[in-house]
Image 1 (cartoon, rainbow, N blue to C red):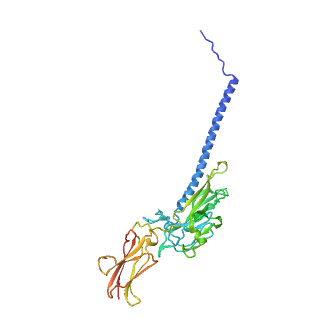
Image 2 (image 1 turned 90 degrees about the horizontal axis):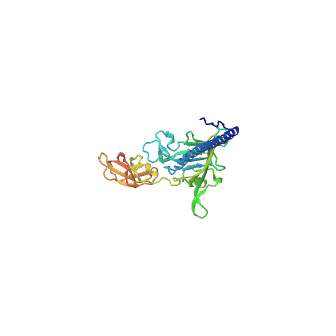
Length: 386
């Protein structure tokens, strides 16, 4: 027995309703996916800008925090401070293996970029030059503190007129690009400065350096010289740099993303000078000279001269005295020390009048630190006393 079946399909109205519902679902799904894709792309654009900003700020912070590291007393730590340039001294890099004082060891660093500049050079954006002054740890020993300059310049390679490039320069070397697509953070300067001073209550605190005093420079070529006062000394009182910066992802229009930041960069070594660490054996680095002489009273004597040790004015700065040995020429051992002379003089000279005419003597010298430890001996002689 055949059962009749209902062969009726969808009516036109039902088909239109179904298609309409389907189109609404698809349209909603596509719209949601487009929104998610737009949000994802926006996040990527913002991340690109943020990474660019963080890299620029981290590089500046890492280098600025070394300001004053292992810098001799005569060399200014902060030389120039402007709203778009800062120049400072630091023993940042060395190409000498096992150098314990530099912040970083780079065996490939050029010789001209691991010590104080050998001559003056123009500071970018400043209109002034770093002084053509020889900075030394001791006479004949160049300062290991190079001069590092960070500065911003308008980027002429893009269509924008308000973006900048951050450069880093060491001594008179060529500047290297650190980051591009950088902007000012509103109307704030790239660099502002804070110094120790009276906060108005009689207490010492960090206070902003007024805009009217920026830019400033260490006008005296020699730190702590008689002329190192007034505006020159302002540079010596700075203890922090305020970095204000914005960055873009390098795109334009609706695809552009920008981020901004302010960061206080402390200068922990500013104003501290070189500290005595009294750890490793002292480095003498000086030649002992001995010669026969006659004193003003007619007495014969042996005249000894030498310069301060490397570790007296720089390095660990822990030399407290110099130890001298004397022996008859040809003797095999030095025996006990002959005498000790306190450290602290710009140069050293000692006249040994306890000698016998017609005799010959040999002398040795070592630097002693507060451990106490002795440097390797340097010798002079024989000296024949007439």
